[in-house]
Image (spheres, helix red, strand yellow):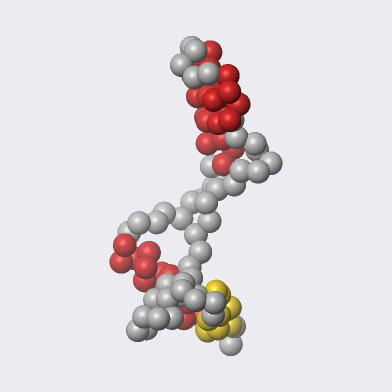
Length: 97
């Protein structure tokens, strides 16, 4: 049996449970909400480049000030795509994710 350990949604507790059960709960959430799409490729570089180009265009047209441009300019070494992770809600019946 493969186990999974997660910090719970509320409190300073840990959830230890079956990895298969956790996967089933995640799949159910995906199906029920239809709010998530699994990506087949990593769009990070394309998104990053578009942001940089847009900021450059705004600055060139003098629509933002230099300090705004510098503050909004992302640092490629510190940026990452959002991650999907679940914290089990142990305070609810059935421990949903």
